[in-house]
Image (cartoon, rainbow, N blue to C red; front, side):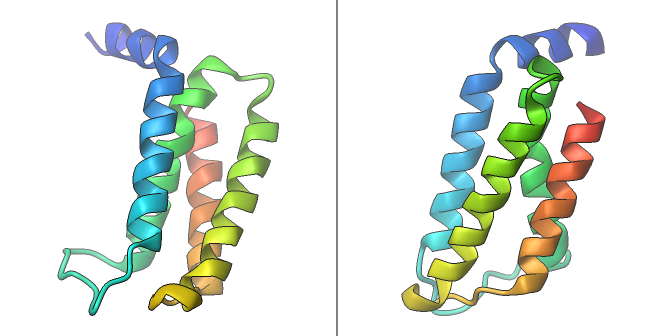
Length: 109
């Protein structure tokens, strides 16, 4: 069962990755009057989101995943730089959590 699911994710990795990237970007750049009350730490949410972002691609592109991870690190940094201009908080700690999540997702894939 697990192997079939992993094969499905590896085949459809572009869709999973695009959808996850869209959701991360949308949620990160949507102005909020206050942060929603979601259980867990904000940094944990960043780590999980970015691990989920890279995991499907890591399953499918083991040899080229380092380049995609670099693109996602840059994307994440740009989001953090934009956030202060749209009533959000850009934080270096968020960027570090994102990078750690990318590395974990890459290793798990």
